[in-house]
Image (cartoon, rainbow, N blue to C red; front, side, top):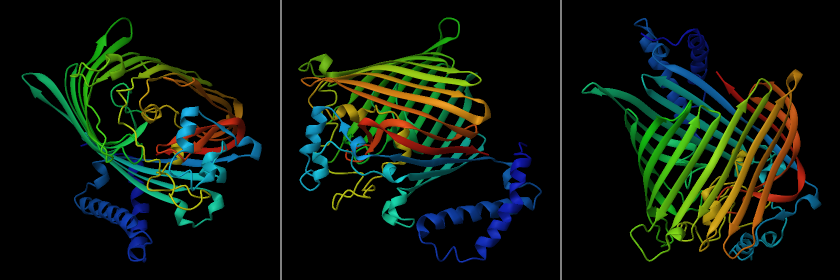
Length: 487
């Protein structure tokens, strides 16, 4: 019978003492947030009671499960001088901002200056997660906690966020006529997920269900995801993705090829707009973890010959590199994206209201609306589908270059640089370059924990209906302490 080992066994005495303290305290009756804390407490007590009951027969609950714990988060702050707070953006996006319904009430939106955001006040974020695994079953429970700025006050509830997340998955197999059939099902939260090869749904957090059935190199999949209206302004209530893949086709040397055909079916949002289904075809060529070449092409209104096919279509072509040495890490990706005007038609809202702020009152210390722009999303790339759907009625393409370089010096010191260049071309608009960068140096007390100081031209943008970035005309100082601990 598989056993966890000494690491889990050593947890038992401490967990029992914590249980006794909980049972003898008033935490169960005087919780400020009983809905979340109460559920966590009950789950904890049930786990311990099951463990104690199993112990009577000589085996403990932990003998059957493999546990791991993750702590991740940090503090990010940016320092601005007034002359450094000027922002730049395409004329088309600036016009949408100025003429939005909120601009009449918020004169800051008429100016080319940075609006208030959590990083100006040094924001903290923490995510605690527990993962339990047994016989193909995996349960991942996470809790995201954020305080949106030291200037807000320690106990300011309007700028404090608590978000629970859960994912449950099961993978198994069976034999059929001597052939091994693998299948899997998962449900819950999926962070920073990529669907297909990343033409539309990528760099995005979703909730839903994922399933697959694999026989040899053939894999069939079905994914269903919930609302994309509120957090990402894509005007999809539900999205379903059906896929059929041929996997791990050996080419030459260490190169492997995957081919995937897919069908996207959408339920439109709440503004009466119509969105069309999509067929797609993609491929990926890999050489271990060091090289990846990928592409995906999509087409809408595929039964309607009235439209020009190129305006109905979209295409992605990309290449990604990863090099790791003793003291040197380098990753890079280059992409070319194209979205026809009819491909993106209807996949954006025209309401012009805030998602990440309250729509009334001034913008100072106003960083949580009906939805949350997580601080950790500031560390993600600029590119996402919503960047392109915002150009309604226009063909839009981009050329993207992303690169990260890090070098470790003796004594835990390091230097790093990051670029995220996005060159946007929209029909009847002037081309625009977003040349995002960050250069920093600091100290790493642990492998995945670091404190640093540097300069950047990236800033949080809470004035859009999807989580994105402002481009600063002048660099600002950025200080951060980020950590990731596993045990």
